[in-house]
Structures are given as structure tokens and as C-alpha cells.
Picture 1 (tube, rainbow, N blue to C red):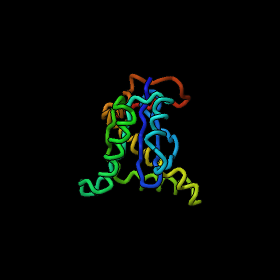
Picture 2: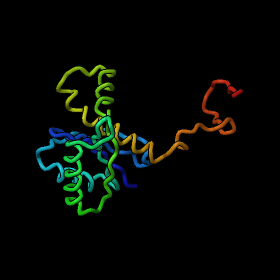
Picture 3: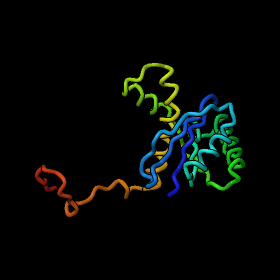
Picture 4: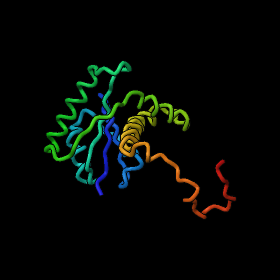
Amino acid sequence: MPRILAIDHGTVRIGLALSDEMEIVANPLKTIDAHHEPERTIARIVREKHIGRIVIGMPYHMSGEKGGAAERVEKFATSLGKELQHSIPIDFVDERLSSVEAEASLSRSGVTNKRERNAIVDQLAAVVILQEYLNQQRGPAGFLLPDESYELDWSDEPKRRRK
């Protein structure tokens, strides 16, 4: 089953995340150098991991307008599409605050070493982007809890009834 690849495009590093086969959970994949033919590297990953769709974080301003960074990302997406011979759909996802969320996650995890943080912060930002995309695709029904008639007997706890 094809997976979804997410890209957090930066000027120095590019973070990549990959969905599971059921397209429910986003997982960090790797960080690549933005200066050494990243399109070729990503095209190789697309073939190896059987990617069926790519989502790229679009850096909007807080006002919702596109800025200079958005133009850079659009150029990258065009170049990547050419490298993939336009065989894989590429979508954009609003990435506002994805890096902030990734940094906060690292702080909560206790990762303080700058080298360690730099190695994974872009991957985590890509995870945030991809998880947002997966949640949007599932829609609100994907977050509903089963009702009481669908309880499974895998817990020793007594069943509680809703009022």
C-alpha cells in the first residue's frame, strides 16, 4: 500500500516524515542536506518506500499571506515534480507553527544538545505537517469514539455507563 511522504523544506536542512501504510500515523524518516541535490535524494526515497503522495509544508505568514519562503518552496516543489516526472501528486499543507511545535516537543523530551536538536527538529516538523494532513483527510468522523454498544472485553476494569 502506498505511503505519504511529508517534507519540511528549509534553506539548510530538509526534514522528511513518512506515514504508516494505513495513513493514520506520521513517523520521522530522516533529515537531508538542502544543498546537495535534495530532489534526487527524495526521488530515490519515493521509489524505495513506495510513496503514493507527497505533502510539503507551505510557510504562510501569520496573516495567511505567502511570503518569500513560500516562493522558494513552490520552486522546490516544481523541481521535485520534474525529477519525479510528475508521477506522484504533490500537495501543500499550511506549516505555520510546525517548527515551534517540534521545538516544544524536543524541550519536553529533554533534548538540550544543539547538535542533537538540529539533527531531528526538521524531521519532527515534517511529522507535524504530515499528521495534520492525515487528520484532515480522516475528517471529524475519524476522531469519534465508539458508543457503549461497541465495548471490547480486553480490560479488567468494570464497565462504566455514560449518563
